[in-house]
Length: 82
Image (cartoon, rainbow, N blue to C red; front, side):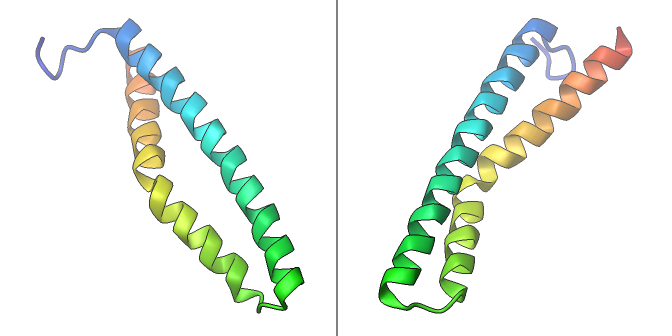
């Protein structure tokens, strides 16, 4: 199959899978932030500790975020074409 002729059902399935993974990752980041906040309070760490946790999460999950954005654009293009 050519790169320009993608199966709409397959793209939709990949988009939904990417959305599900993104939601799971966001929940994980939320739990990490809660844990980091508790650790920061317990040990008296500076507020920058939370920033480090958020930046690391963004770096770790950026491929999934990028994949979701690409698939969302493909799905919108396919829906507009139909």
